[in-house]
Image (tube, rainbow, N blue to C red; front, side):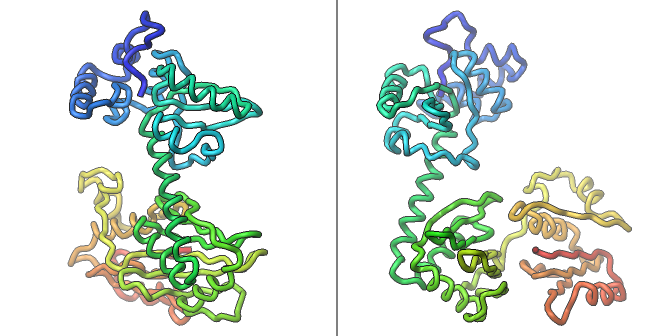
Length: 375
């Protein structure tokens, strides 16, 4: 990470002093960072501030840039899409903690964990000049570079693992599902495209490409998915099914025809998933405050969010807080994904609709009603 003060501009105040003058940190924060450095050899002061989260990351990286005399950039590992391996090898990026992140015409922007290392900067500049590119230097956090590298390597490992099962389509599909389970994936997207079948996982709300399957295997993959989901093999219109092969998971499957074939989305839900407390989700830990928010009489609460952002988790956590022997709680769900002892949970199907269930529930002396449809 950027060092304490610039070697080439010694008259500038050190990083810690500058941050204090700006009101971004306190003296005690510097003591914490120095202690962290003592316990973690090789960590620069700026990186220690970042790891300890003593102030806003954007303010911190901008101040580091001011102190050492370089433009700053805050790279987001989750949304990083730039194919940097076209310009620098993975080995160079890992060894020197640099990350190309944007290109316009013949100018490429490169973020350095330590741009004050003139030898590294000169070497990277020469490599890019040989490709006909001029380099603009930025400073970023070393942990951002590491996280981006880790994400790319994880995807490459996924592709390699899936390719190793390429000859047996049943094993290929099984490996896609088991790999998703290991990575805490909420949804698997298996999508036919013009020249391949793309596999993506939704992890913590983000869709990530993990593999591409040969187009020649598309019909076999579709056939296997329909077989284990109890779908009609001959039907190519939209269908819904379930996979019951994995004892710890409920897997709901949806298929839809697009211009290149049938797309499948698999929703993964652990049968015995532990229910987080509301404070674990970021809500205040004061139980009185939570009771006021989630236990009001004669009210309606609406929880809405994009796919995979925690709607179900929040609802079940709230019910867990309210679930007491003197409270009658009934849920109507499509589908019931987590069974909670003490609740009356109703699952919607062709014979049991939301409307019918609600009419009955209102005659069942309810205190709390939850309606949940996973669309």
